[in-house]
Image 1 (cartoon, rainbow, N blue to C red):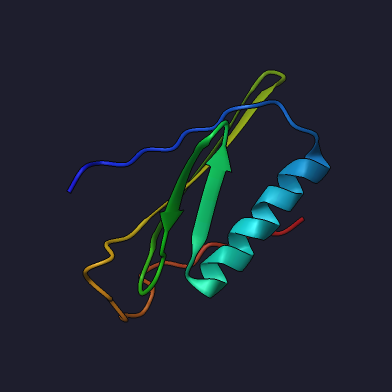
Image 2 (tube, rainbow, N blue to C red; image 1 turned 30 degrees about the horizontal axis):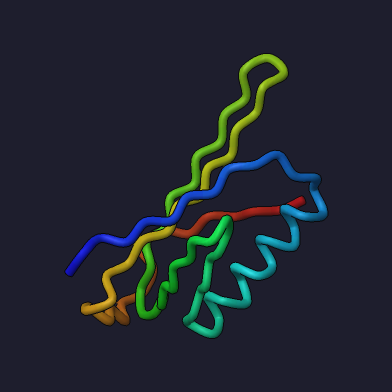
Length: 89
């Protein structure tokens, strides 16, 4: 099977970022994510046990937050999460 890729990078205000994140949450709940920009698109179907990686860094006035999720569509793992993270505002 051919590899499909999608990439998007842009400066956006916090409300737009919030809208993107809410759409991701909704898509994960429906087990269907459709990402599209600049004439390119990819559909992903997150299901079962997903792996999440969160990295945060602050150096001077520069901040970075990276969130990555991965899963294997063929393996529908239903095991319990192995670690818990707290996020608050």
